[in-house]
Image 1 (cartoon, helix red, strand yellow):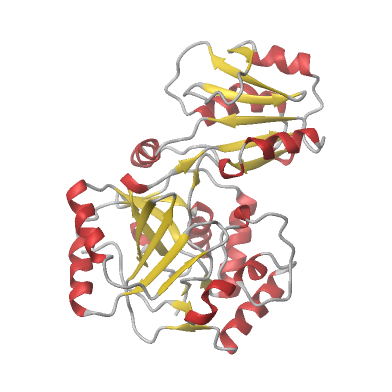
Image 2 (cartoon, helix red, strand yellow; image 1 turned 30 degrees about the vertical axis):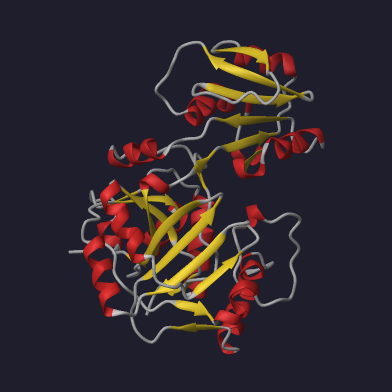
Length: 367
């Protein structure tokens, strides 16, 4: 029995696709709400009822439409000459955490609650949950061959990536894809844990829409932290020096595992753990530093590595925050290992780049 099933997706008409879809807000600079009917305004409207009206208007005006029958969808993202080959379908939540569909990351209760409200109010999932599966070189060749036909959508978005989507209607292509999917024995949730938890807590029969990428193609960036603390630098140093050496960083020096970058007083420092550890760097940071500097999560902000070091520096130089920590990225084998061992990474341990656009393929969560 296949883990991924076809469904009747909701898609924009081709001529509207580029203007109504949107990358994650982290990819947009100085975004301001407008009255335009698109998914970036929908997701960032001042209240959920306003968002629902935007979604309804997109449907009423025929800008987005639901397919009349069930299909699989293929989604390709191209960035820096690299390609991510995704299969879009639905999964059964009853398979979650039973050795077939596995998560790896802790969630925030408030964010899960917000996602639950949003999903139920919209009765829609406006972008697929990002997942992966173990892949082999031979199977990847077969997958690449399925992507050789002309896509239904093909355009560059504001994340500087090319996004292509196929609606699988041809019988021979569907047969090839079904045979490929049969060999996917486990699916690992990468990005979308809050939505999965929201669906589970809704206690309704919801089949999440997912996009499954081969593990060999998945790219993970660092997920960094800026914090606000009343502690002086000497006190911070004292906490750090119990477990780390502390040296001013050389310009453009890349971090290694068990090293953490720290920006304070307009200087970058490298924190090197005294004893090598198999723990994730994000866990080491939380246990040995953040838990001693912060009383709660209100004084911390998570910043994608996509933004670069300059953004971290700007947060601190502006005095909105007091110091920044830059991390070595978690890798996909660690994600899979944690999921299989039923262990959980700290929140915001991974930033998967690139991501599918919001609104290019959506689905009803309750038919």
